[in-house]
Image 1 (tube, rainbow, N blue to C red):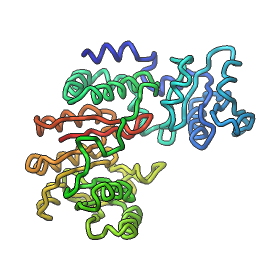
Image 2: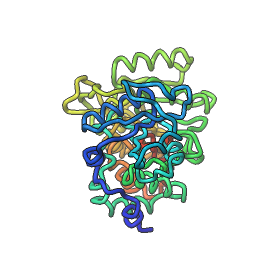
Image 3: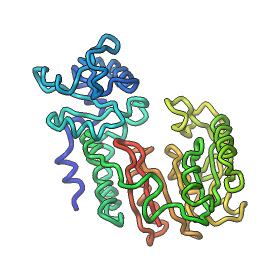
Image 4: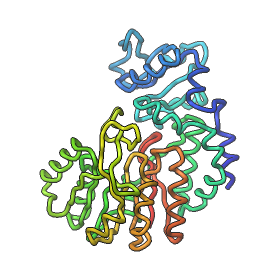
Length: 361
């Protein structure tokens, strides 16, 4: 399949989201809540006038947010020209389909919470400069659903329209062929407060061993409390560490909208300890059956620190591919390079940019 031709036919006229906002005089924001207000702040930065908020909740119709009226979908017809509509709601895929008659005027802005961090994903120059790698990655996926998901995420990123994004028919980290199983030794890179740990333990009947990694003191404290409250201390080994390609000390940027999105940065405000998975496995004398990584952009670095372990144990892999613009294709290519026999799958677990996971076994 010629992925480039498909993307060229779907792309809009703007090279980036910044370009779109700079070229837009006024918009309607779909989503009359806190996310809608965050989207309004982005519009204000670019001197874009917000004509109205739109929402499906009839209880909000006729009310106001910051002196701007909330309207129904039917009222969109009252505007002389089809307005530009920016969707701030997490239900952005469903809403984009609902607004299909407005087609090219509908753009996703669910990433308004951390606009500067995520806007680079919707930059066509990055995508079209990497087409050779993108075409190669597309050919690696083991099934049609994964290839479709890969293409849909790219279509979304060149069109800004979330109607392309279809969530997977299975839960996050529970791909039919790549999921935790009883008896597994599991590496949970990026445990946050332990939500995934609870799911893994429940779905294996607590018949597993989980090595959890979370580097920030406050979140680690919550993680350990949740492990204790769930009576999982016998099977979960919590580490106040981040996975990376080296062992040492780094800095974490915690100046983000959600603590779960802290990122390793040379200019970070919090000092953290990091370790490579290879060193950790050698020290603990373990061979993992499953490695999950959701580590806010450090996935490729952590993979480089796990090369020995991956080659030796050939574990199942669940690696997030959405934190950096090129992760979507770079991570599958690197995993295939390490173990060519891996079956690779891709799942999207939201209606927008985030929660896309590479599965391998």
